[in-house]
Image 1 (cartoon, rainbow, N blue to C red):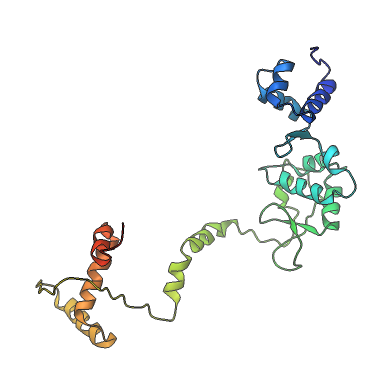
Image 2 (cartoon, one colour; image 1 turned 135 degrees about the vertical axis):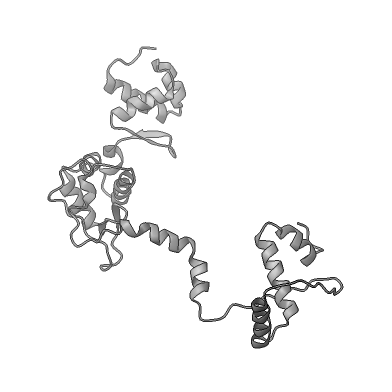
Length: 251
């Protein structure tokens, strides 16, 4: 087999072989590449992208310049912006636009607007909120300054993200904390005979137990048992507690 020395011929040869069902490994071996990864580097250097579903390489011109493929073209643009530190100018060129101004106009005409929160385009399902349309007049840095200089009226919420993350992770605790309804007092049905166990405690704690028992209509025995069970469960004795509470369960 004659090795394709011309890069364009080699690119076409690789695409044809893949269309005929050959694998990248086999083609790489034929062309003298060390492995398929070296072949992949060559194809990507030529502006090609890999479609893992169809096992094909494609370019933007192949996939997205045909009429009726607007959805594919939009999804390709969104997919490229998912990469970190992407340059909007490069995205526009890869998507077949003259520049990022044309790309912005195209996305807007398809009802997509720029979201500064996620640094990407989203469907303009609502005309309100904190979504700011893309402004590209002064886009001249490596990543178009992340569109920050071109998004007017946008509040920088990055400083609040750690707080929002904390609130989300502890949502249930905050709901319980601010709930108007008092939590239900746990009552545990513990099997076994009743025994007397005497121990000393602060008179103030003893008074608290008595007062609580009267005000909540719960016996002091139930208070002490619930407190001990909750304590043991919380501090590494949950399995042993489960054995006496649920003796017939398989742990």
